[in-house]
Length: 96
Image (cartoon, rainbow, N blue to C red; front, side, top):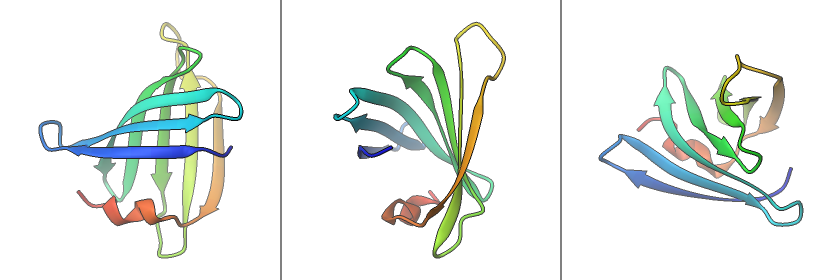
């Protein structure tokens, strides 16, 4: 997955509005992201209307685990994908 992410801090919700877009595949997602425990959780809807939860855990200076989960709005949590990725600049906001 490649794409561009825009994160805007909103003090009223204590988190960030997040817009992610992959123009090549016409894929996009709108989420709300917040620090949770020692990680980051982003919750929202994707372009297919599925509920999505992205979790960033085990954050270190040079890596993190990304767990992407999705489900339809009327079902239990569906499939899950876990990927270990190199750290990105986004980690600067891990602690809000």
